[in-house]
Length: 196
Image 1 (spheres, rainbow, N blue to C red):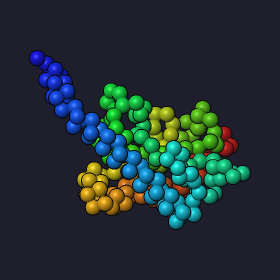
Image 2 (image 1 turned 180 degrees about the vertical axis):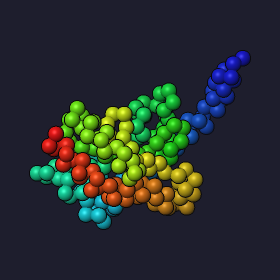
Image 3 (image 1 turned 90 degrees about the horizontal axis):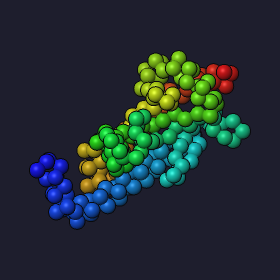
């Protein structure tokens, strides 16, 4: 009997509990995402930044990045750089795993932009990758910058037990502070992209 056959048998025998656990994992993930939205919204308001703070549309940008009422660039939370979101191969199945940085998942704060197409953007991004890495923003293979902000699983577990999920949002808030500190570097890059 193979290891998988034995595991498969255990899974089938415990399917009722596993199904209930999967539902709780999804519910916990949704609660964490709602907390991420709330904290991003609060942080942006305190900074005087604009953005969208909806479940399916979450981003923020400093006011100076808006041209004719639309953002030229923005920051948004999403999965890690090598994650398709499909849960296949080495990718995590649950979004909760991504939020907590476990099972191969990551939560990252990404920099997005509309100032130049990727053909013009990528060479400029590569030229600025070293200096942005010093600000803890890394260049993905697709030419986008990100900083990791996965939540600490032990802090989240303790915060959930205490009913104070806000206490586990420190990595997200630290990533937003890194974004604010790197704003000038990104503004310089955007100015070059506009001229490219």
